[in-house]
Image (tube, rainbow, N blue to C red; front, side, top):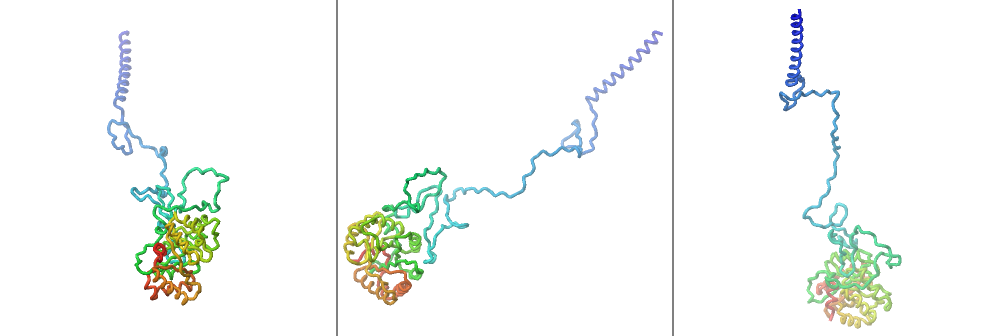
Amino acid sequence: MATSGNKGGGFSIGVVYGLIVSVTLYLVLSFIFPFEVENTGPVAAGAGVGTAPVMNAVASAEAPDTSAPDAPDSPVAPMLQPEVGGENTVALGGGNDSSPATLVNPQIANSAAEVEPVLETTSAEIPDIGNGSPASTPPAQAVSPAPVVADAPEAASGQSAPEALASTASGPAVEVFAVPFSGDTSRPMLAIIIEDTLETSLQPLVDTGQPLSFALKADVDSSISAQSIRESGFEVVAMIPPGISKTDGVAENIARFMQNVPVAVAMIDANATGIMLNRDAMQTVLETTGPAGLGVITFAGTGDLVARDQALRAGAPYGNVVQIIDKTLDVDLIVQALDRAAFEAATKGSAIVFARTKPETIEAVVKWLGGAFAQRLQIVPVSVAIQRPAN
């Protein structure tokens, strides 16, 4: 009985032992060779046997997209870049216009005044207008404002007080602002100076093609008219107003007149009450205009020989108006006055006459320039006449 019991107990132990071994072997084999779960979705690219199973993502549990949203499709202006090797200048002008901005004189068709220089971005130097005074201030720069001095003198217009103008490196005004001339100076020469009274168009005189000269009032700012006339190819003369003192403030007045007509080749005296026929005043005029190289012109009268001698001694170009041709505003009489002036030019070698831009004067001058007497002479700019005066 004991033997049978032991055998039964041994069988049970063996069964349990076999189960344990089988389970253990199963677990070991399952660990070494795991079962593959069939995937109903597409296999990821590059997946193969022996890789971890790829599970299909459930639509309801889809992970949110954490990437940044696309930028809105809006046009953005490109940044302007400097052109490499391009000209380093900025042209001043109106909108969509790269040409220089200009002021025009309605008295002359297509005239230009105060042509603005091209602004150099690499330089802040003040351009010189030719008579020693600055034409404009340099471009504004980002600098700290200077302290205001309460007692600093300043002109009402923001400009400094007139000063004697020094000659420029380019030469005297009588040469710098002279118009090109290639006429025959061996012939008798006649210079015609016409005061611009601003009453009528100068176009008929311009259309003659003759090198006439125009006088502008110097006691007011005539710089725009002066520049437009000069840019149109004609010479300008600064005209001293009547009534100027011959003793007080002569130098200051003359310096101011020079600034008001900055492109003048010469300064002409007032007719009735001129200061150049006074010896002392004329000396001051020569000392003031001399550094700028302006010529001086007087009207014939008592004292003009002394003025001529003073100018020649100072080395200043000098001229003398022999006749005012339009004292009477009659076309035929003005033509006759021009004939007499032509005869004097033929006798002395050169002559200067003066007139105003009255309608009758313009008609007579245009008529005379197309006549026979004018063809016997050489009409010259005033700068030629005062540098080669009459004998």
